Amino acid sequence: MANKRSIAAIIPSEFTVTSSARIATLWSNYGHIHRVHVEPNNGPTSRSSPSSSSSLTLILKSIHPPSLSSDPSESHVRKLLSYNVERWFYHHYSHLLPHQVKVAKVYTSNADDDGNLLLEDLSIGYAFPASGSLGKEATMCVLKWLAGFHGTFFRVHHRPPQDGVALRLVPAPKEWKGDERVEGVWKRGCYWYLDTRREELEDMDKEEYAWLLPWVEKVNNAIESEIEKSGTLLHGDVKGANIVFNRDPYSHRRRAQLNTDPGSLPPLQCALYDFQYVGLGLGVLDLIYFLGTSVESALLSKNEAELLRFYYSSLSEVVVSEEIQIQTYEEFLRQWDLAVVDWYRFMAGWGFWGNDEWVEKRAKSVVAKWNEGSPMV
Image (tube, rainbow, N blue to C red):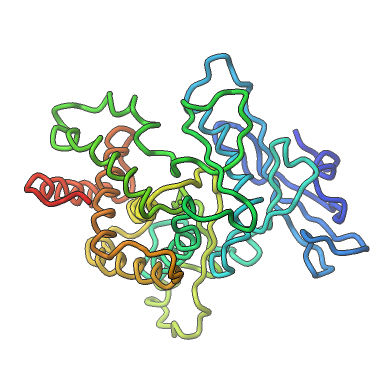
């Protein structure tokens, strides 16, 4: 168990630890998260230290997974590699994001290679987590963030090294050799793509999903092809639990009750964290995961087209280089259809949650369209 002394040994020498507290245990007890209160020491300000001399709080993510057996499960290897992927992204690529696409600043610790990740405490400026289905304002806010993230890394796999750092790709868990050093982002971002879920696919009821199964491999192949043409980096796990806001994202509900003026509130902004599944993919895969799990169901039923158009317009504003052309809106919508069916495939094998009824209805309508001869891409 980490204590103040062991945590102090991890914190950079320009800080003095005044107190710390464990605030969370990672999934399957793979480690812990600590909030660490520090004060900058007198002396030259390093690149990683803040300009202010006041005390501040940091977040320490300390990974200590169970020992790797001679025949580890795919799930265990996925988690094990994911923490290395997250550290690599924070240290090598997160600084490329514009300030509007807020992520935690990373600090160089004294034990980065020993399963530790030291980050800015987002709760200071973004104290309001997404604790339920999001309304339209908050949904638009997250879509704007995603457009900025995807736009920053659009076609990154076809671009020269970013800020001197070449893109490195980590293979799927089943392809990883235990003695390989893990450096880079996932070759395929997110945790639910087909090649990591084939056992679940085999267990799906063949009769119940007869309408879906003939399209599973076709969808996966089409996504792979589209990534080559218009891929980007995905966050990979865009759910409410990984989103925080600068003010209450549910205040619209209370404003209706209290009849308060929405103009009196600051603009809503968000930040995202947990980059364990960052990697190459299509931006629509982040979209379907977010919209399918974390927004009000009525919003999807009534405003799907508006939400998609808003994201695409925001993406177009970010990708302005003459050398990089984003897909047309019609191509984007066909990619969206692929993502809807692919997300439903995952839920059918793993379990249904979120806006699953809406996703099922949309997936069936997409497949029906394909059966009638409409092009997939």
